[in-house]
Image 1: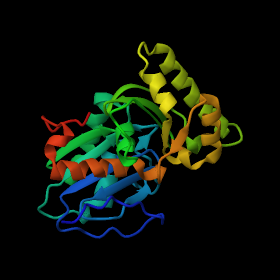
Image 2 (image 1 turned 30 degrees about the vertical axis):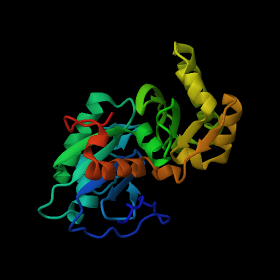
Image 3 (image 1 turned 90 degrees about the vertical axis):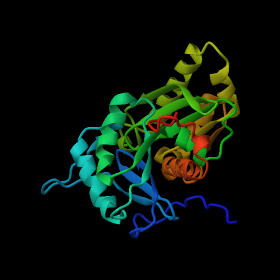
Amino acid sequence: MTTPREPRPLTARHRSWPWCRQCSGIALDLGSARTRAWASGRRMILDVPTVTFPGRSATYPIQRGAIVDTPGTARMLDRLLGHRMPRFGRPLLILTTPVLGGVAYRAEARTAVEVLRPRTVLTVPTPRAVAMAADADLTRPLLVVDIGAHLTEVALLADGAVIDARHTALGTSDLDSLTPPAQIADAVVEMVTTMLEQDHTSQTLDALQRGALLAGGGALRPDITYRLTNRLHAPVAPVPAPHTAAVRGAARLLQAAHTHPSTTGITDAAHLH
């Protein structure tokens, strides 16, 4: 009996992603700057810019963690993935979502992914997907910091579920002479401090003392990690391949849904908590 392999991230910016006759599931991470996808039976991740071309110029259908152009997002997904899906297959799709995206985001996302003809769409908050990719112990409180290109999120997980979260419309794409890395780190510290002040239990403090997981492109910046460690007075550990952690975590959940459906905790096939 072979052991399922964990999906491995691409090192190149883009590689061909062959059409897969037996693909039965897709893990999808729709980022403001990059879209990443992984399919069952493949060991590579499709990693491409989140962009569409309705005319002569490029447009960006996802901005600051919000889907601002649902038809554009659908066109992008169809262009990237549609022709790689089996003609008669209907895949199970697990989609990462911003931690504070809410019902509105999930509705827009589910509308956009219908172009892939999924038989079921499950959503998972990005911080939980990151924790899954890092193989973190979810029986203890966990703090996850995700610094993306256009959005930075901080989430507290307890028993694998998000129980508190903050975000700010600031990311690595904003870095320039007027927005140094320290500004992003300080924004994270401010969000964590607010969570500590408003937590009437010890879970946020327990998670912080345990150490924070750092994901997203910001985790590739040693200066951000260093400043966070110093300002939070706590360990901050970048997850392996942090820019693809969310889609790899979704891929793990996809594998679990195929092999052990009951482990996902899904009863209505609508939302992964």
